[in-house]
Image (cartoon, rainbow, N blue to C red):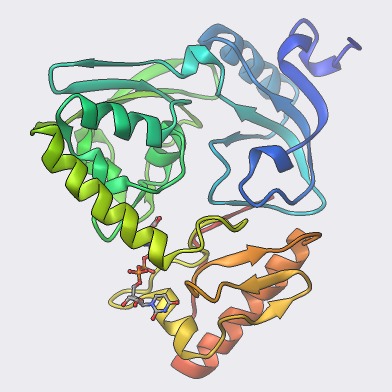
Length: 296
Ligand code: EPU
């Protein structure tokens, strides 16, 4: 393999000019200058230090389910913590410890099987544990922050620290953890018979399946719900379902989803986002803010 200058010695975990498409739900957008997939905390710390030494900006990818990568791609490093060393979890009594790379859906299943309630309210939300905590994943049934006991993070100097629940402010689709890397988290759940939890899980899952375009290429809900109302409702009322720009269209199933059809570009989606914002402002006098993360 050819030498990757700022990351010499770490070639095994660094790809240059790597497509991020396979790592996003939209499957669109440009390349990352460096895509870094460490196999341990030590490798992560090393790569992070190289970024600092070489003034390389860094970003962290989760499951890419709430992300739009622009067509021009990303200058700098994109980290992906999906190696098995970041994807371990263990359950002890009602305490669950999970690495950043664990899939939320997998953890929900395993906790339900262990008669532990809480995370089932996140049914149907595609995420890694790291991404879910960073964005305080949730919806009308609750949010992940409620169940977090502590979070282990790494800062830009490669130092590891643990934050307790009390030290973190979980807000609507965000939290105030300043360290760029979430390494793992522990959750405190409630004991309850598996059958009861499964019932709730199924109800939420069915609701989503009937109201959201789960099989289409999307980034989940595009806009944040304005206080007291729903972005989907406002977009629907403005008559925008099905409206298209290029190969992007407003879902006819749930108006807060923008679906990418074959050969869609990120630019199509961005233009449609802007158009929806303009139309909703005209019709309802409300400026919708995006929930989706747009890179860069
Ligand atoms: N509505 C319409 N037309 C639409 C879509 C929605 O009239 O096209 C109406 C619904 O009938 C309902 C209201 O708007 O009366 C709210 O809709 P929904 O129950 O679908 O929830 P939402 O407010 O759109 C969603 C997600 C959130 C997400 C936020 C945005 C749920 C079930 N869904 O809520 O959660 O974060 O918008 O912040 O909570 C997710 O569902 O995966 C999710 C992450």
